[in-house]
Image (cartoon, rainbow, N blue to C red):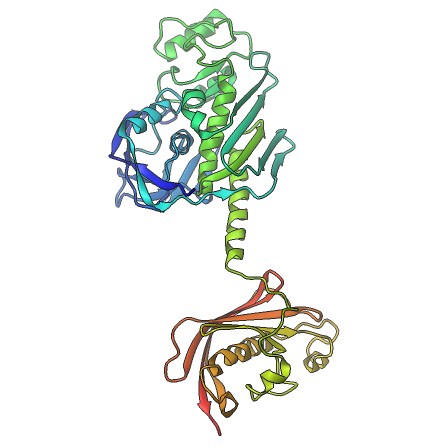
Length: 465
């Protein structure tokens, strides 16, 4: 059953403070059209530049995920994106009047609440999922990071394990079997840091949010009363102590394994940067923003590769041909050694597919790199043009009385070598109707699944008999 894309029913805004900048910021979720995806817009900057939520735009993962495009950046996007994915939105334009999303309480729940209150509308376009086709692995041996995406046809599932060699945290696991569990099980889980990290951030003036009610602070060392008093002063509190769970008593845990659940939340948000909704099971040990982004890039690269292949039909060279060599010679005026098409495998009014078997017996190999034979690029284009000539000559009742002449070759690219033993298959498609005997074609040459040559051709047929 097809699922329709979703956007928000009406704009809704949330306001808060940036954790690292300490600046007040208002963030507004706006409806967006079909196939828009998630985009941030910096309305405080001249021209209101837009930043696509795309893994290729990630510029920093040191203290959250930052994306940059069109001369503008947005930091700490992961909690916002997790809320959008967790509620299964597809299209959203997110306005910001500052460089960082508001940290709120350190979780995704304030965003979830605002989005749920605003509601959603279904759009006409279908949601197109990318189904993980096989196990995709990512690892970082130095950080002991392991991530894998596994096939799962009907849902998006997450399993996360964290282990920081900390007697306080220990080893924690978190899992959801469906995005439908996100709101209840994951959204409220807050970010966390270790006390020594907090002290480093404070020392370098890198945390200016002014409060620690938006983070779980894990106490991983002995802390004396003097230091606790100093922290209380920094965060405008009367006193701070260490709770029995080994965390600062500024907040109470919402879940026993809240740190692991928040790492799972971060994964969902960072993997949103792949740019398409996923179907699969993501398992991760010791993930972090840098690993999440690297993993997202690996998945996106696979999607891009597969989508490019969808436009390339792989032909069986042994299929029954439309024309064999003898029949081709009844149409084309070329003869060996300049006849460079052996078979026509497909022929319609708009496209043609031809085959050239490349052997060491080709006469051009006698003088063209005989010690390291490579089919000349100019002859690849000639073979492509002869294939296209069959398409054009198919429009006249007496093709044997016509010639096909080149008018133009543009955007020719040679992407790989063609060697003896290769089977070179050409496909030429008309890019416009044939007028006055003039044909414009887009041609590609393939060896197996790989495109080795492509060009745009213009040819004209003229009568010579």
